[in-house]
Length: 358
Image (cartoon, rainbow, N blue to C red):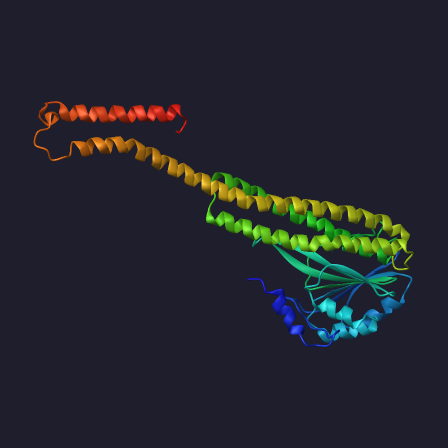
């Protein structure tokens, strides 16, 4: 059962602003990987301390990507924040993994919060992970709770010098990471779309209590997806404004790529809203299907009851204990009554069929 985010945030109640408190469901042991490159040179290494990362900040000739996985080591993150000149509120937000996607300008760097979505094939559900980005003049620092494969392709591009990424700066690297997250939203929507199609077939053929449970689970996942995507539009808009304002952090050449990400974000939002409408309508379809099934059952029972009403009357009539009843003494009276009841039932069935009640 997922944790209550409001209850988790209550751990910070009463603490001074900027106090770092790790708020997350899960997190790995802290690991730091560095990729430093320019158009001709590249090196990749794993470091242990913030001091080992500091030279990459000062070297303005290359672009550097510092990937930090695991947010449990609060002391390391505080030290890293001091070495890189991060505001205490930024460090606090990095550790609080329930942040809304946003972009904040701190003059020397940009702080960006994004939501990464991972589809768990085993449990058939969408899992959310926060990623924080620090974009400086020549470096990008990414903070994640755990490793996943979303950025593996980008690392391959850097290692093999494919595309423009080695020729461009840190701002293009930040765009590439943002684009990978948005592209992954399309994969999540594809998975959810397959589940929606299966549920639609189940609703038409055989709706059951399990079906309505699956619908409610899907609705919750669509809400999570919507909360992750909608604010992202503001983030991309903010980055575009930075490029138009001649910010030294985002060059004009990167602006056109950010517009492309913005278009993809709008497409994701449209698809999310469409899927939400479909899932919301499934509840009405379920109720209608159950009601129609009940109506069909009641119709069959009503027809059976209607057929037996006159038959019951006849049997009741001849079941009266009168001494003088002419038909009782007739040799074929019993068979005549049974035949009449059969003919009456057949005539009623023909009438129902003609009225299209059957």
